[in-house]
Length: 517
Image 1 (tube, rainbow, N blue to C red):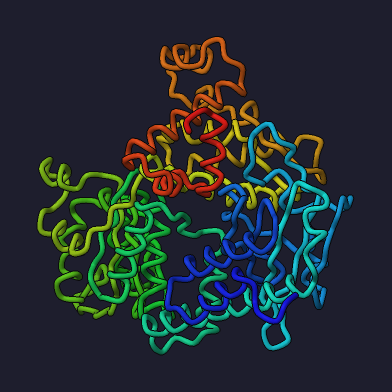
Image 2: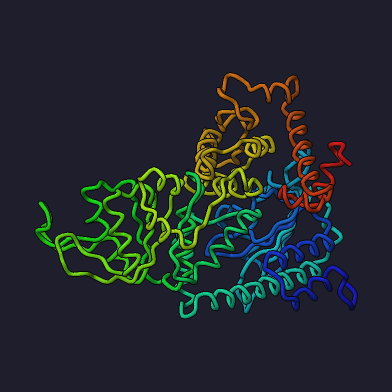
């Protein structure tokens, strides 16, 4: 290694002094790593407890970003974390965490033949891992340990810089809340995250951050299964009320006779069975927030009492004439069109306007298809942990099937499909890699195209794929998707790659193979 840094190392070092978003910082870091090391894939992972969580990857499938890699389940990662310097593997028999997850042509050998990793240290403690993988067994022979160590040091500095900026931003948004409490909140919400970087999800997260710090009443709308409750939890988590409870109320489960007592409480003797005073859900959330889920189902007779609370901040327990004040923020959610309910006389107009001070619409999954791979990877990792399985992978055909489907049940339906498919694919393979193929999904379509019945292919399917092998049908689907993205972006390949959720270089290679370039 020479006296002066090589251009990739210099670029990474210069980026440390530039103010940029964490994801942009990580992306530029991996671009520099791939220029310095001849690798097919690279990943930057943050250590969280006993798991390594990807914060950025290049040359790997998008579903990697939805996964968590348990150190105990991955011997190579365990060696990376436990080392004080670079670690290399060449044709090792130890399983590689990214086997089957590299973003290469469908007909290529997906097993990893060479891999290296370096722990990222800060003040003597490991904070993450930088790894690189290559399909050629001798790809890293010409790279010295000093270069790898330098990349690791720069990656650790970049991660630390991103953390500091994130902490400062969080502190500004959550003044007075200790960092320990922040971490506890995040841990409690593990498994329930707003995942995705599509334009629709970016806009949704922006609305959440804008509104969270206010005291405005929020009405969350969206189809069944889109994640309205997760939005409510995120609003509460980012608010100044986060140290107080978020109380959940399913309005659809409230009978008219019990709804008032459940929401506002009752005093002893108010009705048969009321043997003692009892605070309602709203009063119990004093200082915090209440999520009124399926608020469109709230009995009409209860709506004036909720309206009074929104207007005055006061409620009355059933059987009492004494008003009780409660400092509560109301968050409402519904999959109904409340304007239609108002027109039909089933919902009060004045209550609707009180609830919809800040409306937030959660996009359906079909409008954020770029996030499907990330979500699928996240659910696959959850299935792996729940079922005690080895690594769970999707074939390219399975992901193509996911992308072609309309997902009427949204994210919830995708989760259930992944869980069921993983269970089927794992039959008899408890400690071996599990590969999910289209035959495991049992979706009501072939290749993800909507059809009225599983046994009756749609005319669209027959016309588009009749007579093609599964590989050829997948290539045709990929080519069609790339053409659509290029048309939508006026022929700009970089913009098309962002919309499709793939690396630009990989899209160029795939386009060339498919005859599009």
